[in-house]
Image (cartoon, rainbow, N blue to C red; front, side, top):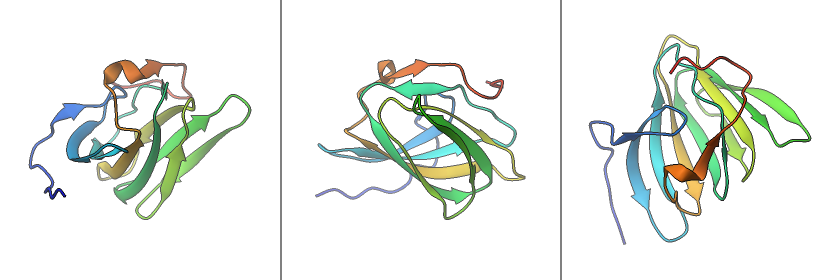
Length: 127
């Protein structure tokens, strides 16, 4: 059994460009706290083997997702949850007055930065 606390400083950057703090990991998945600074548009990516669940804690933004047959853009605000199935292209941005902050759960555990491949997105990335 594990117990952790949210680190005070960021551990890394996601392949898309968010500041991340590692919270928990295990054999079936891992969990991070992600922060996207105000006005930042992250790079569009697609995961090869990992699915994700997100829960928005703070801030406002949008996420664009496309699975090849359909696409949508969803407003991200506190209380909203979304999924990113394996192979789904996605891009997100922070467009409110506060940084966009969310919890992200990856299943299976994140294997490393080679997991993400860059794809064409809907917005011009700012990072």
